[in-house]
Image (tube, rainbow, N blue to C red):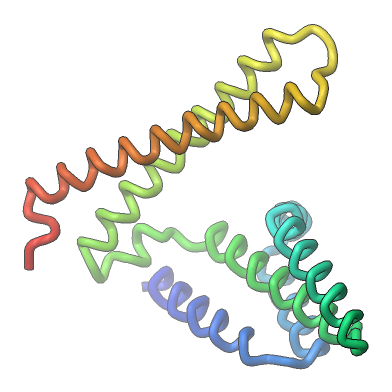
Length: 183
């Protein structure tokens, strides 16, 4: 029951945060989340920052270019967008860290089934990615050039994308044969 309630609070908080346009209120929300996270607050904050840095950089730079061109750059808006995205990412990481999603989705067997499949696929791909990383590391003596790193990343990404497409097709067929998509 606690997990279902926490998931409901999380969903409501995501909606609420998207409607808040005050930096102080968002900062207070972030402070509350730091308290809730406890000892893992710094680790989760680092993960949240790493997960949003590329997105935030692209959006912020795009905004700055367009706003400068139009003649009205707002530092408040830049801070608001970046704080909001960080808060949402941090909130998600805290929720995943504190809530058992399988129990939270117990109201629907279909949702539990989909979550289990998704989680299994995520762990398999994480393991594959780590295997590719370790294979590259074990086969190189010195530091690789940026070109070689990009090639390895592109090859790994292409393989993982093909595998994801094949796996999703097979899973969908298996689910269909078991009557999952029928009403």
